[in-house]
Image (cartoon, rainbow over all chains, first blue to last red):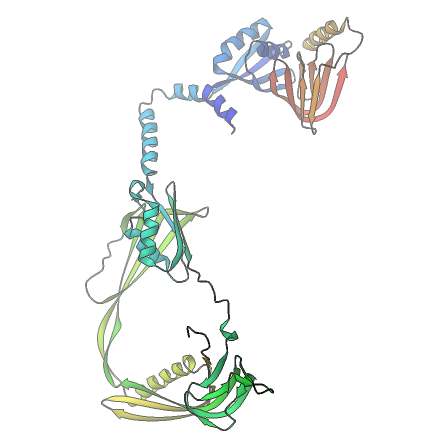
Length: 396
Length: 91
């Protein structure tokens, strides 16, 4: 609907049907008398079209002058709509109420759109924004985007920038991480030595740069120089260069894990309480009669947001699940404690020794102070080289 | 048929004293085959979905086609829309 259609609608129109000899003359006369005739169609000697309500009387007179019968087929537009509904007393107050409600509701923020960052979750950002008064249902008159940005950044920290844009009932919060400029001189370009980071016997050396100090079969202790970044030239001079080498040594790692044979642990009792709430424009409406009783409960809540055409609606479904935990005394047999300890060792090997080749593993156990203690002695082959920069810079 | 005869009478009376077509004051503009604007028109002589004849004073212009209608009409110009097949100059 273009502007002209809107104007015509507000002016009101009469749809006519003209028959008779030479209805084209009616159009010509109408134009000369300044009567706007539009949407005209001539089919088999019958002319149809529309004239504005205010011109219809003059149009009818022209029809008589040119011997054309004019029949009003339909009346439409705002004046007729208004006249047809004039007896409905609730219409005008209803329209007024509609505009008042629209005006009133548009003075609140109903949707807060937040994009999470890799370091800070959306939940934390929303909590920080809520502290500053920006939440679904907040009155826009109390909000100052500059103040919200400044205080939220101070509260959360570690952000490069933050922007709060309030458009209508929609608040869009943009957050960007802080990016630190990288060092122009790469660490790998600096002259350095390779030192041993733990005790062991060298079994393999792969020196790409630098002069090796240790030899195969040497037993080294932590801090010993393995590859030097000081390289001598044929002319008798020395110069510094970065050392690049992999020095593999056979090392021994001892790991002890302990499991009490009798202990108290909080375990789920099987009792769970669930409740849901519908949050509509900031108002929380409980769905059901569930409540969270006192006691030791683990609280798990989920928030479902609803979208329409990629726009978030001010409707959320909050679902809360609480699981009761009770303290239970657990007594383990030696076999069960051994299984627990072995599982711990498996995790240790997976997460701590993932870059180490385990050649041998010896296990021994002892029961001491009502606890099962399992000790593992690993014989491994690993890269024990550690970069140690040569302090040539004044600030170093 | 009576109205057509009347239209024809007007046309003939308009052109009765003119021997030569003088269409220099008429401006016709076409947009593809869907719209034609005639400036300098004096009135509508015939209006049907298949043909619309426009008086340009000393002559008449017929626009032939399908689903023709007058989109806009003012004292000096007319805009005809529809599927236009031919424009004829009569006089």
